[in-house]
Image (cartoon, rainbow, N blue to C red):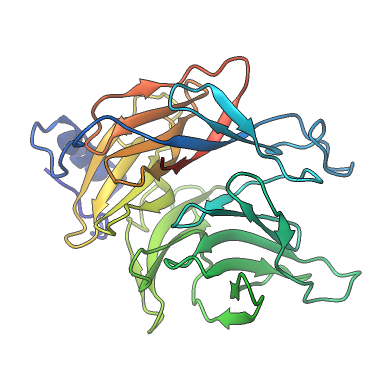
Length: 326
């Protein structure tokens, strides 16, 4: 019924297994105990012109909005001055959010208060550098992020949010879209490679990095033509949600969609099919929200794939949800 993505199987076998997993009536993850509660932080997309200073009318992913689970906006939370805010990272205690833009790593309270930059430039002023892919430590005291300098070679740092103390982390693979496990022991991340079938195409796989030994374990098949992205830990650390995309563009491929992996057994189950990305767990672990690119909508569904709700937020365009509890 389930698929171990670490096995060396071809894409045809992977597709066959995915169909079996999706079509099974036996769910390996329990349905939610009750209805979803809380609200969502989402990014509101807008046209972007990178030749101009960032402002709400010129840059994509500027608008940060808290919305209800019905899709209606509750409050605007874009910082001043406004800036692009993808990717957005929500602290485990849901009191702070972090984002990266150029070399700056920004932090502010979840209600939009007290925005500040916690990083400093590591290179001379005339040399380019970027901070990217922030993820919070389980206790909310530190942020781990990916950094690239003028030569574009990556490094990784953890920074203490209050003291701004910076420590380099010797991650041995090019980790992006990182997710720090709730127990603090490992990092799940997305690593890009050339496609085995087309050297002009890059696709990504998921890996797990032990933050003590820095041993690396592949979580998805590194030999197939399927792109894996956006890992997200369940609050109890038992499950890892992620997105798969075959690149076929049909919207009906048996691999495409949001999957969950039991991190103890590495068995997986597809929750929802389609061009869906950016899963985020509810604080109680009963539900997930994600962005459905096929419909251009944020969606909510149970951790077993049940109870799909599509949020109607026209004419506004919301992406990249992050779940905030009551």
